[in-house]
Image (cartoon, rainbow over all chains, first blue to last red; front, side, top):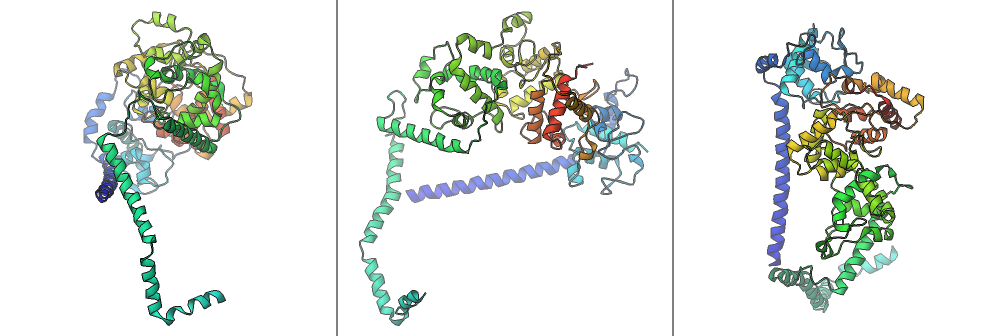
Length: 152
Length: 387
């Protein structure tokens, strides 16, 4: 009888370990998927973004790339000349659209790559000082990325 | 060395001697004793298990423990608390700034079992086993470190729960400070500490307020100013931030034992109403402690320019101005002690919060204690208010 108990305890432990292991794997998988979700092309965002814009406001209507950039605090670290963004901690983004590569040369300079960088800079550039902004709605990230890419 | 050589030398000489020795050992009564041990190790647990399975052990609370069991459990509990409390690093003087919040928590969470001044305890509680102690009479038995140990970790088999939030030792110490006060309080003093005096008039002003508002007011006050410097002022705070924070407390994304109790189980529509209620209140520019101008100036530097050489962004990038994300809170006029504690919790990644908390943690990890004190003092003085 006690052998049975011992055996079932052992089996229980093994199951517990397995379950934990698979949870881990699932969590990692999810992380990967989350990073990949950023990749889809900007086509859907291009359809949604105009609805966010409020034509009543005179300048920087909410929902435009610049207003989202400032609203979420990007300007505390980055400068874009001619705007309120005067941060000096991160790179000056005034002409980011005309650069050949971003993330210290790791990524091609495309809207998608910029969007991916905004969401999870740590995945693109290990040791990066910038925090992840993947809690922002995907459409906002893509709007900001499109605005930045257009800064020639 | 020479001794061992002498002892070892006869060994290889005769193999038959060795075999004899083994047989002699095998026939020794020691093997019989070993059988007893094996039976004890395997058989007794089986018997105990069998006893439990057939329901031999009475788990009813009505008859109480056997005297010997009660004595043993008391001894084990007291000794364990005493021993584990040795590892607790108790402050020399307890911080009394958290007393109103701790008193509010006591009234909401603890008094039902441990009693509150002037209120008789429920007969149901008196029939618990073990019976929860009337803390006003018994806290004197324990040191501060021991009380901390009990409040933080709870006590097994007694119904005493562990603190509902992890990594919030500051709240546990506030409870210890309150427990030290408890024996001195009469019914009126306790009510003055645990409930906001202006509560009744506040309730009449807004009949549509959810029932949970009474709990909010214990600590945040009817005027939403926060009772005590460690409780945040909510009056005039951004509604979206308040709502997101209430959600974060309810889901456990923001850790606080004080907030977990009142917010759990509140209907989401009521949470929205609470956020609306406090957001609509007029922020008062309350008097603050005198702070050296030098410190406030340093805080202003951090708030407006940051500390570029240490990669600290300016607070203003997210927290000043009406065009910022509504989930980023206003800090103007907030209690300095509260801001200081939150920044330290962010720095150690123990705070959590809305889905944006990691951004704040990243910034806070680049701040020294002095930076935190200065920038907290600055914002507590700042009174531009929401624009």
